[in-house]
Length: 378
Image (cartoon, rainbow, N blue to C red; front, side):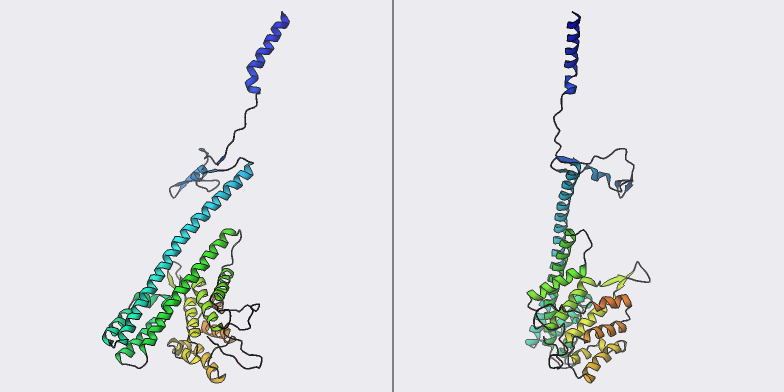
């Protein structure tokens, strides 16, 4: 009887504690979720509650992404990978929208300039000089013509065309308008190059965990451009011009904060110097460069003397490769650039990679195999 009671008590205990001893089935949590700790110290910043310890908005603790059940480290890795993909998609979309808007603005602006220039040419060809005069004056007073860096030189060309149309001077006004048409086309092309550079830069920055060398990216884009544009051979003059344009647009800001008053922005003297360097390259002939209005001013007597030496002492009509560093140096001095600004301006000079399958330099090889000076050919 006693044994029976003991047996009944044992059975009863087993039945009573069986649910506790049974192994619970694994809970499959396919969501990695960070739950906000209600007692975590926080403070308000820009209408958000921010953790005192982590400096992370508490709202971010509630993000919830589907992940495969695994170790905490692997689940966290899955979460970060998904976040990275989503962030890249957002950046790509925003960048695409912004760049499309910028490209469209530039394209519309250049289309308007071309339309006005062609109308003036039509008036001149039809001997409608009064209409041409009014159109030239209206175009010359446009804000974009006065202030847009892409249109540097337009005001002077329009003034020359106006003087020719009104009979104050000789010259061919149509040739001045054709220069404007060419520059408008080149502006479209430059904006396309800048867009390609920005796209490539963002792609590399998203793939890299270390800072990206922006100048190296720009050079890679330029090398691809000169290959696609068939500037790899026979056009050292164009390579020098296009690199200066591209480097200026991509790496030298139009305006900078004033050294004297940090809250005030002012024109960047390095950008202005780069524009003057490019204008000399675009002149092609030394004689034409000497006829540029700003070159004739007393402020740029060093630059003028440098060009006159090439013309009268060295008896050359064009620049050669070895001229460019000296030209930049004297131009920086005339523009009163400091050492840092001068260093930036020097980077506008295209340094031709020697491993390319051609022997020409940015402007030209200064001495050929026979010891004869070679000049630029466009």
